[in-house]
Image (cartoon, rainbow, N blue to C red):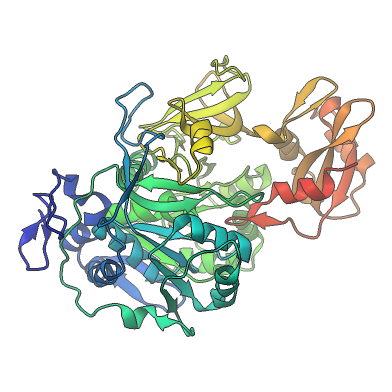
Length: 559
Protein backbone atom coordinates (compact mmCIF):
# COMPACT_ATOMS: atom_id res chain seq x y z
CA UNK A 1 0.00 0.00 0.00
CA UNK A 2 1.43 3.36 -0.97
CA UNK A 3 1.00 6.45 1.15
CA UNK A 4 -1.80 8.77 0.10
CA UNK A 5 -1.07 12.22 -1.26
CA UNK A 6 -2.89 15.45 -0.44
CA UNK A 7 -5.03 14.94 -3.51
CA UNK A 8 -6.17 11.55 -2.27
CA UNK A 9 -4.13 9.61 -4.81
CA UNK A 10 -1.72 6.88 -3.85
CA UNK A 11 1.75 8.24 -3.22
CA UNK A 12 4.97 7.08 -1.69
CA UNK A 13 5.64 4.05 -3.84
CA UNK A 14 7.32 6.28 -6.41
CA UNK A 15 9.14 8.30 -3.74
CA UNK A 16 7.26 11.60 -4.24
CA UNK A 17 7.87 13.87 -1.26
CA UNK A 18 5.23 16.49 -1.96
CA UNK A 19 7.75 19.08 -3.17
CA UNK A 20 8.18 17.85 -6.71
CA UNK A 21 11.37 15.91 -6.04
CA UNK A 22 11.62 12.16 -6.38
CA UNK A 23 13.54 9.48 -4.57
CA UNK A 24 13.87 5.76 -4.87
CA UNK A 25 11.58 3.24 -3.17
CA UNK A 26 11.44 4.01 0.51
CA UNK A 27 10.52 0.71 2.18
CA UNK A 28 7.03 1.77 3.12
CA UNK A 29 8.11 5.24 4.11
CA UNK A 30 10.11 3.92 7.06
CA UNK A 31 8.87 5.43 10.32
CA UNK A 32 6.93 8.08 8.41
CA UNK A 33 4.43 5.52 7.14
CA UNK A 34 3.86 3.66 10.39
CA UNK A 35 0.86 5.62 11.66
CA UNK A 36 -0.81 5.36 8.25
CA UNK A 37 -0.13 1.63 7.99
CA UNK A 38 -1.43 1.09 11.52
CA UNK A 39 -4.54 3.13 10.69
CA UNK A 40 -5.12 0.72 7.82
CA UNK A 41 -4.26 -2.50 9.64
CA UNK A 42 -5.76 -1.84 13.08
CA UNK A 43 -7.75 1.42 12.87
CA UNK A 44 -9.94 0.81 15.92
CA UNK A 45 -7.28 -0.47 18.28
CA UNK A 46 -6.18 1.94 20.99
CA UNK A 47 -2.54 2.83 20.41
CA UNK A 48 -2.14 5.54 23.05
CA UNK A 49 -3.89 6.11 26.35
CA UNK A 50 -3.39 9.26 28.42
CA UNK A 51 -3.75 8.34 32.10
CA UNK A 52 -3.71 12.02 33.10
CA UNK A 53 -6.80 12.99 31.08
CA UNK A 54 -8.40 9.59 30.57
CA UNK A 55 -8.37 10.06 26.78
CA UNK A 56 -7.70 7.11 24.48
CA UNK A 57 -6.55 7.40 20.88
CA UNK A 58 -7.03 4.74 18.23
CA UNK A 59 -4.49 4.25 15.49
CA UNK A 60 -6.87 5.89 13.02
CA UNK A 61 -7.07 8.93 15.30
CA UNK A 62 -3.31 9.02 15.80
CA UNK A 63 -2.77 9.08 12.05
CA UNK A 64 -5.25 11.92 11.54
CA UNK A 65 -3.57 13.89 14.32
CA UNK A 66 -0.16 13.23 12.74
CA UNK A 67 -1.41 14.49 9.36
CA UNK A 68 -2.63 17.71 10.95
CA UNK A 69 0.66 18.28 12.74
CA UNK A 70 2.65 17.41 9.61
CA UNK A 71 0.94 20.31 7.84
CA UNK A 72 1.95 22.62 10.67
CA UNK A 73 5.54 21.40 10.54
CA UNK A 74 5.79 21.98 6.81
CA UNK A 75 4.61 25.56 7.35
CA UNK A 76 7.65 26.02 9.61
CA UNK A 77 10.21 24.21 7.44
CA UNK A 78 10.41 21.05 9.57
CA UNK A 79 10.89 18.92 6.47
CA UNK A 80 13.54 18.02 3.89
CA UNK A 81 13.42 21.25 1.90
CA UNK A 82 16.76 22.60 3.14
CA UNK A 83 18.26 19.41 4.53
CA UNK A 84 21.86 19.19 5.73
CA UNK A 85 24.10 16.13 5.73
CA UNK A 86 26.52 14.50 8.14
CA UNK A 87 28.71 11.40 7.89
CA UNK A 88 27.01 8.22 9.08
CA UNK A 89 29.92 7.17 11.27
CA UNK A 90 27.76 4.93 13.45
CA UNK A 91 26.90 2.80 10.46
CA UNK A 92 23.09 2.61 10.50
CA UNK A 93 22.20 -0.10 8.01
CA UNK A 94 25.49 -1.93 8.57
CA UNK A 95 24.54 -5.30 10.06
CA UNK A 96 28.03 -6.23 11.18
CA UNK A 97 31.44 -4.55 11.43
CA UNK A 98 33.19 -4.55 8.11
CA UNK A 99 29.97 -4.21 6.12
CA UNK A 100 29.40 -1.67 3.39
CA UNK A 101 29.85 1.92 4.49
CA UNK A 102 26.47 3.66 4.70
CA UNK A 103 25.73 6.88 2.92
CA UNK A 104 25.67 10.27 4.57
CA UNK A 105 22.81 11.04 6.91
CA UNK A 106 20.23 13.54 5.67
CA UNK A 107 19.18 15.91 8.45
CA UNK A 108 16.00 17.83 7.75
CA UNK A 109 14.47 20.74 9.63
CA UNK A 110 14.10 20.27 13.37
CA UNK A 111 11.35 20.82 15.92
CA UNK A 112 12.47 21.05 19.55
CA UNK A 113 10.06 20.34 22.39
CA UNK A 114 10.31 20.77 26.15
CA UNK A 115 7.46 18.84 27.73
CA UNK A 116 6.40 15.99 29.93
CA UNK A 117 4.87 12.91 28.28
CA UNK A 118 1.83 14.07 26.31
CA UNK A 119 -0.05 12.91 23.19
CA UNK A 120 1.37 15.89 21.29
CA UNK A 121 4.85 14.35 21.46
CA UNK A 122 3.51 11.22 19.75
CA UNK A 123 1.88 13.48 17.14
CA UNK A 124 5.24 15.16 16.55
CA UNK A 125 7.01 11.80 16.31
CA UNK A 126 4.73 10.52 13.55
CA UNK A 127 4.47 13.92 11.86
CA UNK A 128 8.24 14.42 11.56
CA UNK A 129 8.39 10.94 10.07
CA UNK A 130 5.92 12.03 7.41
CA UNK A 131 7.70 15.30 6.56
CA UNK A 132 11.27 14.04 6.80
CA UNK A 133 11.90 16.40 9.71
CA UNK A 134 13.64 15.70 13.00
CA UNK A 135 12.09 15.62 16.48
CA UNK A 136 14.44 16.90 19.20
CA UNK A 137 12.88 16.49 22.66
CA UNK A 138 14.86 18.36 25.33
CA UNK A 139 14.96 17.59 29.03
CA UNK A 140 12.98 19.96 31.23
CA UNK A 141 15.41 19.07 34.04
CA UNK A 142 18.30 20.95 32.46
CA UNK A 143 19.53 24.34 33.62
CA UNK A 144 18.81 27.39 31.41
CA UNK A 145 22.41 27.52 30.17
CA UNK A 146 22.30 23.87 29.11
CA UNK A 147 18.92 24.29 27.40
CA UNK A 148 20.20 27.41 25.66
CA UNK A 149 23.29 25.63 24.37
CA UNK A 150 21.22 22.66 23.17
CA UNK A 151 18.81 24.97 21.33
CA UNK A 152 21.73 26.64 19.60
CA UNK A 153 23.17 23.25 18.65
CA UNK A 154 19.88 21.78 17.43
CA UNK A 155 18.96 25.01 15.60
CA UNK A 156 15.25 24.15 15.33
CA UNK A 157 12.79 25.82 13.00
CA UNK A 158 10.13 25.57 15.69
CA UNK A 159 10.12 25.28 19.50
CA UNK A 160 7.21 23.78 21.45
CA UNK A 161 7.04 24.34 25.22
CA UNK A 162 4.68 22.93 27.85
CA UNK A 163 3.30 25.44 30.36
CA UNK A 164 5.20 24.25 33.50
CA UNK A 165 8.53 24.90 31.76
CA UNK A 166 7.75 28.26 30.24
CA UNK A 167 9.91 30.11 32.78
CA UNK A 168 13.02 27.91 32.47
CA UNK A 169 12.78 27.97 28.68
CA UNK A 170 12.36 31.74 28.81
CA UNK A 171 15.56 31.97 30.85
CA UNK A 172 17.28 29.68 28.34
CA UNK A 173 16.18 31.86 25.41
CA UNK A 174 17.52 34.93 27.23
CA UNK A 175 20.85 33.29 28.05
CA UNK A 176 23.99 34.36 26.21
CA UNK A 177 24.52 30.71 25.23
CA UNK A 178 21.32 30.69 23.14
CA UNK A 179 20.86 32.21 19.70
CA UNK A 180 17.40 30.80 18.91
CA UNK A 181 14.91 33.54 18.05
CA UNK A 182 12.33 31.55 16.09
CA UNK A 183 8.66 30.81 16.76
CA UNK A 184 7.52 29.28 20.05
CA UNK A 185 4.23 27.42 20.50
CA UNK A 186 2.80 26.50 23.89
CA UNK A 187 1.17 23.37 25.27
CA UNK A 188 -1.41 24.14 27.95
CA UNK A 189 -2.14 27.59 29.37
CA UNK A 190 0.93 29.53 28.22
CA UNK A 191 1.67 33.05 27.10
CA UNK A 192 2.81 31.71 23.74
CA UNK A 193 0.59 30.98 20.78
CA UNK A 194 -1.24 27.74 21.40
CA UNK A 195 0.14 24.66 19.66
CA UNK A 196 -3.34 23.15 19.45
CA UNK A 197 -4.78 26.32 17.91
CA UNK A 198 -1.96 26.51 15.38
CA UNK A 199 -2.46 22.95 14.13
CA UNK A 200 -4.58 22.90 10.93
CA UNK A 201 -7.95 21.14 11.02
CA UNK A 202 -7.21 19.06 7.92
CA UNK A 203 -6.41 15.49 8.98
CA UNK A 204 -6.53 14.00 5.49
CA UNK A 205 -3.43 12.16 4.22
CA UNK A 206 -0.33 14.22 3.43
CA UNK A 207 2.14 13.59 0.66
CA UNK A 208 5.04 11.60 2.10
CA UNK A 209 8.62 12.80 2.11
CA UNK A 210 11.06 10.72 0.08
CA UNK A 211 13.11 9.46 3.02
CA UNK A 212 15.26 6.38 3.40
CA UNK A 213 16.93 4.59 6.29
CA UNK A 214 19.73 7.16 6.43
CA UNK A 215 17.42 10.13 7.07
CA UNK A 216 17.60 11.46 10.62
CA UNK A 217 14.40 11.25 12.65
CA UNK A 218 15.30 11.77 16.34
CA UNK A 219 17.88 13.88 18.13
CA UNK A 220 18.18 12.43 21.65
CA UNK A 221 20.68 13.98 24.00
CA UNK A 222 22.87 11.96 26.30
CA UNK A 223 22.18 12.07 30.02
CA UNK A 224 25.63 13.17 31.15
CA UNK A 225 25.75 15.46 34.17
CA UNK A 226 29.07 17.14 33.34
CA UNK A 227 29.07 19.58 30.45
CA UNK A 228 26.31 20.15 27.93
CA UNK A 229 24.79 16.84 26.72
CA UNK A 230 25.57 15.67 23.19
CA UNK A 231 22.78 15.22 20.65
CA UNK A 232 22.74 11.66 19.34
CA UNK A 233 21.41 11.32 15.78
CA UNK A 234 18.98 8.43 15.31
CA UNK A 235 17.92 7.64 11.76
CA UNK A 236 14.79 5.97 10.43
CA UNK A 237 16.90 2.82 10.01
CA UNK A 238 18.23 3.03 13.56
CA UNK A 239 14.72 3.27 14.99
CA UNK A 240 13.23 0.56 12.77
CA UNK A 241 16.02 -1.91 13.48
CA UNK A 242 15.80 -1.39 17.25
CA UNK A 243 12.09 -2.06 16.98
CA UNK A 244 12.68 -5.28 15.06
CA UNK A 245 15.34 -6.33 17.56
CA UNK A 246 12.99 -5.69 20.48
CA UNK A 247 10.01 -7.46 18.96
CA UNK A 248 12.01 -10.54 17.99
CA UNK A 249 14.17 -10.77 21.12
CA UNK A 250 11.53 -9.95 23.72
CA UNK A 251 8.55 -11.59 22.02
CA UNK A 252 6.24 -8.57 21.92
CA UNK A 253 2.62 -9.09 20.80
CA UNK A 254 -0.08 -6.85 19.28
CA UNK A 255 -2.27 -7.37 22.35
CA UNK A 256 0.40 -6.03 24.73
CA UNK A 257 -0.21 -3.07 27.02
CA UNK A 258 2.50 -1.14 28.87
CA UNK A 259 2.72 1.92 31.11
CA UNK A 260 5.53 4.10 29.75
CA UNK A 261 7.36 5.42 32.82
CA UNK A 262 10.44 6.82 31.04
CA UNK A 263 10.41 10.49 29.99
CA UNK A 264 10.10 11.13 26.27
CA UNK A 265 13.24 13.28 26.20
CA UNK A 266 15.12 10.03 26.83
CA UNK A 267 15.70 7.06 24.53
CA UNK A 268 13.82 4.95 27.10
CA UNK A 269 10.68 6.97 26.44
CA UNK A 270 10.73 6.08 22.76
CA UNK A 271 12.85 3.10 21.87
CA UNK A 272 12.60 0.75 24.84
CA UNK A 273 8.93 -0.05 24.27
CA UNK A 274 6.90 2.85 22.83
CA UNK A 275 8.05 2.63 19.22
CA UNK A 276 8.11 -1.20 19.08
CA UNK A 277 4.58 -1.22 20.54
CA UNK A 278 3.36 1.24 17.89
CA UNK A 279 5.12 -0.86 15.23
CA UNK A 280 3.03 -3.87 16.33
CA UNK A 281 -0.23 -2.03 16.96
CA UNK A 282 -0.12 -2.47 20.75
CA UNK A 283 -1.12 0.00 23.52
CA UNK A 284 1.08 2.48 25.39
CA UNK A 285 -0.12 4.33 28.50
CA UNK A 286 1.46 7.70 29.32
CA UNK A 287 0.99 10.31 32.05
CA UNK A 288 2.41 13.73 32.94
CA UNK A 289 3.66 12.39 36.27
CA UNK A 290 3.93 8.75 37.27
CA UNK A 291 4.31 7.53 40.79
CA UNK A 292 4.70 3.98 41.92
CA UNK A 293 1.09 3.68 43.11
CA UNK A 294 -0.27 4.87 39.79
CA UNK A 295 1.91 2.41 37.89
CA UNK A 296 0.57 -0.39 40.07
CA UNK A 297 -3.00 0.72 39.45
CA UNK A 298 -2.46 0.89 35.68
CA UNK A 299 -0.97 -2.62 35.66
CA UNK A 300 -4.01 -3.81 37.60
CA UNK A 301 -6.77 -1.86 35.82
CA UNK A 302 -5.42 -2.03 32.25
CA UNK A 303 -4.20 -5.64 32.49
CA UNK A 304 -0.72 -4.50 31.52
CA UNK A 305 1.47 -7.23 30.09
CA UNK A 306 4.89 -5.53 30.01
CA UNK A 307 6.78 -3.08 32.19
CA UNK A 308 10.27 -1.64 31.84
CA UNK A 309 11.56 0.77 34.48
CA UNK A 310 14.69 1.89 36.29
CA UNK A 311 15.61 0.00 39.48
CA UNK A 312 14.49 2.86 41.74
CA UNK A 313 10.94 2.74 40.34
CA UNK A 314 10.77 -1.04 40.65
CA UNK A 315 11.97 -0.82 44.24
CA UNK A 316 9.46 1.91 45.12
CA UNK A 317 6.66 -0.18 43.63
CA UNK A 318 7.52 -3.06 45.97
CA UNK A 319 7.33 -0.65 48.92
CA UNK A 320 4.15 1.16 47.85
CA UNK A 321 0.76 0.88 49.47
CA UNK A 322 -1.19 -1.62 47.44
CA UNK A 323 1.78 -3.78 46.41
CA UNK A 324 0.52 -6.82 48.28
CA UNK A 325 -2.99 -6.50 46.86
CA UNK A 326 -2.20 -5.45 43.28
CA UNK A 327 -3.04 -8.00 40.60
CA UNK A 328 0.22 -8.52 38.70
CA UNK A 329 -0.86 -11.75 37.04
CA UNK A 330 -1.16 -10.20 33.57
CA UNK A 331 2.51 -9.12 33.50
CA UNK A 332 4.33 -11.43 31.11
CA UNK A 333 7.69 -9.90 32.01
CA UNK A 334 9.30 -6.90 33.67
CA UNK A 335 12.71 -5.52 32.80
CA UNK A 336 15.02 -3.29 34.79
CA UNK A 337 17.29 -0.85 33.00
CA UNK A 338 19.44 2.18 33.70
CA UNK A 339 21.65 0.60 36.36
CA UNK A 340 22.02 -2.56 38.42
CA UNK A 341 18.87 -3.95 40.01
CA UNK A 342 19.46 -5.21 43.53
CA UNK A 343 18.84 -8.86 44.37
CA UNK A 344 16.28 -7.98 47.04
CA UNK A 345 14.18 -6.05 44.51
CA UNK A 346 14.33 -8.85 41.98
CA UNK A 347 13.34 -11.38 44.62
CA UNK A 348 10.32 -9.26 45.62
CA UNK A 349 9.02 -9.41 42.04
CA UNK A 350 9.82 -13.09 41.67
CA UNK A 351 7.89 -13.76 44.87
CA UNK A 352 4.85 -12.25 43.14
CA UNK A 353 5.31 -14.63 40.20
CA UNK A 354 6.67 -11.96 37.82
CA UNK A 355 9.57 -12.68 35.44
CA UNK A 356 11.92 -9.76 36.20
CA UNK A 357 15.31 -9.57 34.51
CA UNK A 358 17.86 -6.88 33.74
CA UNK A 359 18.39 -5.18 30.40
CA UNK A 360 21.14 -2.99 29.02
CA UNK A 361 21.24 -0.21 26.49
CA UNK A 362 22.39 3.29 25.68
CA UNK A 363 21.24 6.16 23.50
CA UNK A 364 24.08 5.53 21.07
CA UNK A 365 23.09 1.92 20.33
CA UNK A 366 19.68 0.36 20.61
CA UNK A 367 18.85 0.70 23.43
CA UNK A 368 17.66 -2.92 23.45
CA UNK A 369 20.73 -5.07 22.96
CA UNK A 370 20.26 -8.16 25.13
CA UNK A 371 17.61 -10.68 26.04
CA UNK A 372 17.13 -13.56 28.43
CA UNK A 373 16.82 -17.03 26.87
CA UNK A 374 13.67 -19.04 27.47
CA UNK A 375 13.60 -20.52 30.97
CA UNK A 376 16.72 -18.64 31.99
CA UNK A 377 17.99 -19.65 35.46
CA UNK A 378 17.80 -17.13 38.30
CA UNK A 379 21.46 -17.83 38.97
CA UNK A 380 22.10 -15.60 35.95
CA UNK A 381 20.04 -12.71 37.38
CA UNK A 382 23.11 -10.47 37.76
CA UNK A 383 23.61 -10.60 34.00
CA UNK A 384 21.85 -8.65 31.24
CA UNK A 385 21.45 -11.82 29.21
CA UNK A 386 22.75 -12.76 25.79
CA UNK A 387 22.89 -10.63 22.63
CA UNK A 388 19.64 -9.95 20.78
CA UNK A 389 19.01 -11.25 17.28
CA UNK A 390 20.75 -8.46 15.37
CA UNK A 391 23.46 -7.38 17.82
CA UNK A 392 27.13 -8.32 17.84
CA UNK A 393 29.03 -8.04 21.12
CA UNK A 394 32.68 -8.06 22.05
CA UNK A 395 34.63 -7.23 25.21
CA UNK A 396 38.07 -5.71 24.68
CA UNK A 397 41.13 -4.60 26.63
CA UNK A 398 42.71 -1.15 26.48
CA UNK A 399 44.41 -2.07 23.20
CA UNK A 400 41.13 -3.09 21.57
CA UNK A 401 41.87 -6.81 21.65
CA UNK A 402 39.08 -9.20 22.72
CA UNK A 403 39.50 -10.67 26.19
CA UNK A 404 38.85 -14.25 27.27
CA UNK A 405 35.56 -15.29 28.90
CA UNK A 406 35.48 -14.26 32.55
CA UNK A 407 37.87 -11.32 32.04
CA UNK A 408 36.66 -7.75 32.43
CA UNK A 409 37.02 -5.30 29.56
CA UNK A 410 35.13 -2.58 27.71
CA UNK A 411 31.85 -3.62 26.14
CA UNK A 412 31.55 -2.83 22.44
CA UNK A 413 28.45 -3.31 20.28
CA UNK A 414 27.67 -3.46 16.58
CA UNK A 415 24.18 -3.46 15.11
CA UNK A 416 22.10 -1.81 12.39
CA UNK A 417 20.37 -0.01 15.28
CA UNK A 418 23.53 1.94 16.14
CA UNK A 419 23.08 5.71 15.95
CA UNK A 420 24.73 7.66 13.17
CA UNK A 421 26.90 9.75 15.51
CA UNK A 422 26.68 12.99 17.46
CA UNK A 423 25.39 16.21 15.91
CA UNK A 424 28.16 18.80 15.51
CA UNK A 425 30.62 16.77 17.58
CA UNK A 426 33.06 15.08 15.18
CA UNK A 427 35.77 14.24 17.73
CA UNK A 428 33.34 12.62 20.15
CA UNK A 429 31.68 10.82 17.23
CA UNK A 430 35.00 9.40 16.09
CA UNK A 431 35.89 8.25 19.61
CA UNK A 432 32.58 6.42 20.15
CA UNK A 433 31.69 5.18 16.65
CA UNK A 434 34.79 5.53 14.52
CA UNK A 435 36.18 1.99 14.44
CA UNK A 436 33.16 -0.08 13.35
CA UNK A 437 32.01 -0.79 16.89
CA UNK A 438 30.15 1.40 19.37
CA UNK A 439 32.44 1.95 22.36
CA UNK A 440 30.06 1.98 25.31
CA UNK A 441 32.45 3.08 28.05
CA UNK A 442 31.02 0.28 30.20
CA UNK A 443 33.05 -2.54 31.68
CA UNK A 444 31.69 -6.05 31.23
CA UNK A 445 32.56 -9.71 31.27
CA UNK A 446 31.04 -12.72 29.53
CA UNK A 447 30.73 -16.14 31.11
CA UNK A 448 31.24 -19.48 29.39
CA UNK A 449 27.50 -19.73 28.62
CA UNK A 450 27.53 -16.38 26.79
CA UNK A 451 25.74 -14.30 29.45
CA UNK A 452 27.08 -10.75 29.75
CA UNK A 453 27.59 -9.01 33.11
CA UNK A 454 27.98 -5.24 33.42
CA UNK A 455 30.70 -4.28 35.89
CA UNK A 456 30.13 -0.51 35.82
CA UNK A 457 31.45 2.47 33.95
CA UNK A 458 35.05 2.34 32.81
CA UNK A 459 35.65 5.76 34.31
CA UNK A 460 34.29 4.60 37.70
CA UNK A 461 36.81 1.78 38.10
CA UNK A 462 39.62 2.54 40.52
CA UNK A 463 42.89 0.89 41.55
CA UNK A 464 43.56 -0.02 45.19
CA UNK A 465 46.96 -1.47 46.06
CA UNK A 466 47.50 -2.39 42.41
CA UNK A 467 44.16 -4.22 42.12
CA UNK A 468 41.32 -3.13 39.85
CA UNK A 469 38.15 -2.45 41.82
CA UNK A 470 34.71 -2.35 40.20
CA UNK A 471 32.14 -0.43 42.30
CA UNK A 472 29.15 -2.27 40.82
CA UNK A 473 30.33 -5.56 42.32
CA UNK A 474 30.76 -4.00 45.78
CA UNK A 475 27.44 -2.17 45.61
CA UNK A 476 25.59 -5.34 44.75
CA UNK A 477 26.89 -7.06 47.90
CA UNK A 478 26.39 -4.07 50.21
CA UNK A 479 22.80 -3.66 49.01
CA UNK A 480 22.02 -6.99 50.63
CA UNK A 481 22.46 -5.47 54.09
CA UNK A 482 19.03 -4.91 55.69
CA UNK A 483 19.90 -1.33 56.67
CA UNK A 484 20.79 -0.34 53.07
CA UNK A 485 18.16 0.90 50.60
CA UNK A 486 20.63 2.14 47.97
CA UNK A 487 24.41 2.50 47.78
CA UNK A 488 27.07 4.02 45.56
CA UNK A 489 30.80 3.36 46.06
CA UNK A 490 33.28 6.05 45.03
CA UNK A 491 37.09 6.08 45.35
CA UNK A 492 38.92 8.39 47.76
CA UNK A 493 42.69 8.95 48.09
CA UNK A 494 44.59 6.80 50.56
CA UNK A 495 48.24 7.18 51.62
CA UNK A 496 48.86 3.44 51.84
CA UNK A 497 46.79 1.97 49.00
CA UNK A 498 46.50 4.89 46.60
CA UNK A 499 42.71 4.68 46.54
CA UNK A 500 40.08 2.99 48.68
CA UNK A 501 36.30 2.96 48.55
CA UNK A 502 33.75 5.13 50.32
CA UNK A 503 30.24 3.67 50.53
CA UNK A 504 27.58 6.35 50.21
CA UNK A 505 24.38 4.88 51.61
CA UNK A 506 20.72 5.78 51.55
CA UNK A 507 19.17 3.90 54.44
CA UNK A 508 19.36 3.42 58.20
CA UNK A 509 22.06 5.76 59.52
CA UNK A 510 22.65 3.56 62.56
CA UNK A 511 24.77 1.39 60.25
CA UNK A 512 28.41 1.67 61.28
CA UNK A 513 31.52 1.01 59.22
CA UNK A 514 32.45 -1.81 61.62
CA UNK A 515 29.04 -3.42 61.15
CA UNK A 516 29.30 -3.10 57.37
CA UNK A 517 32.82 -4.54 57.33
CA UNK A 518 31.69 -7.53 59.37
CA UNK A 519 28.80 -8.07 56.94
CA UNK A 520 31.21 -8.09 53.99
CA UNK A 521 33.60 -10.57 55.61
CA UNK A 522 33.70 -13.65 53.42
CA UNK A 523 31.70 -11.93 50.68
CA UNK A 524 34.32 -9.55 49.28
CA UNK A 525 38.12 -9.55 49.17
CA UNK A 526 39.67 -7.20 51.74
CA UNK A 527 40.94 -4.72 49.14
CA UNK A 528 37.38 -4.30 47.82
CA UNK A 529 35.78 -3.45 51.15
CA UNK A 530 35.04 0.27 51.66
CA UNK A 531 37.17 2.01 54.27
CA UNK A 532 34.80 4.98 54.63
CA UNK A 533 31.04 5.35 55.06
CA UNK A 534 28.71 8.29 54.40
CA UNK A 535 24.95 8.78 54.26
CA UNK A 536 22.48 10.73 52.11
CA UNK A 537 18.79 11.29 52.74
CA UNK A 538 18.10 10.56 49.07
CA UNK A 539 20.32 9.69 46.13
CA UNK A 540 20.62 12.47 43.54
CA UNK A 541 19.25 11.47 40.16
CA UNK A 542 19.72 12.43 36.53
CA UNK A 543 17.81 11.36 33.46
CA UNK A 544 14.89 8.99 34.09
CA UNK A 545 15.44 8.56 37.86
CA UNK A 546 18.95 7.18 37.31
CA UNK A 547 21.37 7.68 40.18
CA UNK A 548 23.66 10.61 39.42
CA UNK A 549 27.02 9.06 40.20
CA UNK A 550 28.98 12.11 39.08
CA UNK A 551 27.27 14.32 41.66
CA UNK A 552 27.98 11.74 44.39
CA UNK A 553 31.61 11.48 43.30
CA UNK A 554 32.06 15.25 43.39
CA UNK A 555 30.57 15.49 46.87
CA UNK A 556 32.01 12.37 48.51
CA UNK A 557 35.03 11.47 46.40
CA UNK A 558 37.47 13.60 48.39
CA UNK A 559 39.13 12.28 51.53
